[in-house]
Image (cartoon, rainbow, N blue to C red):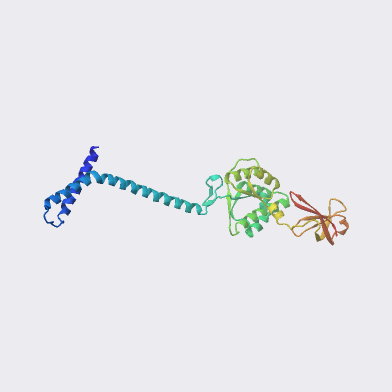
Length: 300
């Protein structure tokens, strides 16, 4: 309270002093006492400084702060709106992405042994269907090494092909291939792949049907090369006629088997004796199996 009185007194003194100074500029008025005019103005200014000005100043301060806060809130809301419109990378589950060196792992592609040995992933990468970071776990390289060291010539060739595919993937534009050498829980390679995919929120590149099933049950994303191949195979319908070369006998001795250009097997009834010849056949039935489509046909 005393502080307010002191402040009011100081304001009154300041206003009175200003009134005394500026009253000297007032020209003399006939039949009036100049001293009386100056004294009146001084008292009035002191009264304004003591009584009126602190209250007016308080109202001005409140109004100023209110307007300032209003404009700050509007400006903040506008900035926030504009920032929300900017494109942002989606981080799964709101977790920060781990990193290999300076490379951020936003849903990396995790290469399986079967996909490396199969080799079609290289052709898919070359045409741009996949891009970004491909992780090759160290335990996958170990499994490839075991296959490459096999006494069986076919297995040995497949293992070496897997290493060649990985090296060729490093040369594909738009891809970055890194070796992931951290250990993960699991007795088998498949279990470790599942664990790694869960930890990194990654997608598994594979040709293994069983691994695909386990990963799907675990709610993991899988890029199965076989599924992609089946999806882009030539579409045929029952009743459609095809020119087909009979290559060998089917399970039934009376059946002949041929293949479409995309590798789809066609079983033709009563065509076992036409091996090596090209026939016009009519599609009778199409069966979807885990490995792809099987087409049954009859001679047209």
